[in-house]
Length: 125
Image (cartoon, rainbow, N blue to C red; front, side, top):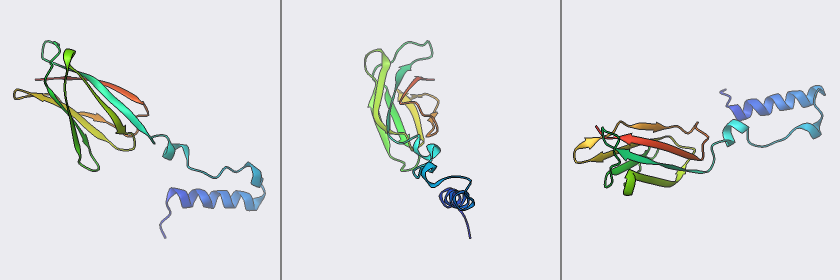
């Protein structure tokens, strides 16, 4: 029999209650903090710049959800700025920019990162 975290935690709680070491009223039954911390949405924003750190308007910025493989895109505006709203915090993502055959390095955005807003600059090579 294979145990997951939830069934293992339930077994520990039951054992503590049965021994009388922990009174019933002191047990909170609900999601564990580690499982619940990354629920919700975040914003991913930043700027696209060239090799001289000059902002690049008109670059296409891509955001790929690594689980679903869905890709969203945004065209950078004045000062090279871009913004993706409502990015699922429970999924890992990749972010990169392209323009005129030049491409930036791919940046990773981890589901373990608890920030609600992530600022990333993408440098075209």
